[in-house]
Structure formats: structure tokens, C-alpha cells
Image (cartoon, rainbow, N blue to C red; front, side):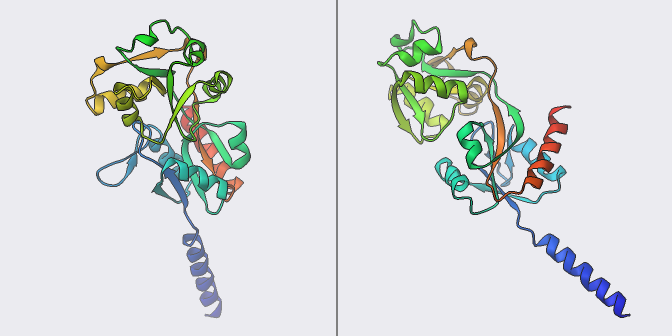
Length: 244
């Protein structure tokens, strides 16, 4: 009787302890087509969907939190809770601040969005032509990385920059109003935005840069509060998913 009582108590405590584990907060902001809050409150997109899949398959509890991009970076730096940012590029500085999983998504090629009637962009052939022209204004999102190659080129040429915290839809509008001359994006993202929000496709053109090669890889980037065991579990599921 006593053995059964203690066994039942132990089991109850074990289950309570398991359910009491804090979830990992999945930090995102709405950015079509990567992560987007649907009408029913769920988060979906070409990055959100595989992230949900690997967390579920790894049996790791999670909760979504919609957080502005600048505050997302502070979460990593402050390292005060178990949180993961979804869909970030990996670079050496970021690797020192938090923990990265394997790549969960491969971007398409990086392009520059420009106004189709901007006469200053007719002779642009390479990314060096673009960034070395100090007369042209780059819309650069604060605290953003555009991947190692583009970040390196921006640092090398030190172009004229207009810093902004606006989302990419507003960046399209700023280009059309000539607040700046160009900004960087992936072609897939540009086409999604133009189609979804019925922007005039004839108002813009896209400069491609074959010298940059394929697009960047995106990762799950976690605070150091997230255990190495959790990262290993996620990596195993990412490997299964990406090797299909």
C-alpha cells in the first residue's frame, strides 16, 4: 500500500515537473514570406512552418512571441530567458552572442530593388558598381545583416546610407517616393510583396548580382539559456527535414 502510494506520488511529481518545464520562446516579426501571423493567430511561412515541425518532432515545448527586430537582438544579448530567433543569418559576431542550429532555410539570390524610372542606375552592372556610387542612397535596415558577402561589400565601399526601421513593404514605397535609390532583398520576397499588396510591378526593377552566388542560409539563433541538448535535438530534426 505504502509502496503504491509512494510510487504514485513519485510519478505525479515527475509528470508535474515535466509539464512545469518552461517553453522555448520562438521570437519573430511579421515578414512575408518567412513568418506571418495568420487570421487564427497561428504563425506560418516558409521559415515558420519548418521551425514548428522540428520543434514538435524534437518534443520541445514552444510559444511564439511577436517582437520588433531591435528588441529581438537585445534578447540574445541580455540572455535572460530561453528564447530563439527564427530565420537569422549566421556570422562570427552573432555566434559569440548565442547558439545557432544548422541551417533551416536557403534563401534565393540577393537583389537590389530600384525604381524603374531612376536614371542614375542605368550603368550598374555589379554590386561594386552600385555600392561604390556615393550619389546613390542605400536604404539600410538598422541592425540587419544581409549575409556575409553583402555585409562585407557595404563595409568595404561605405555607401551613402539612409537608416530605417521600416518593414520591407514601406521600403518599396520609399523607393517609389525617391526617399532613397535602392535596398537589398531576395527576389522571392520581392515578388511575394508585390503580388500580395498589389504594388505596381512596372514601378520597380530588380538588379541581380551573379557574382554573389546562391542565397544565404537562415538558422534558428538561440540565447545561451537554451541548452546544448536542445540544440542537438533540433539539429537532428533539421538534418532529417533538409535531407528529404
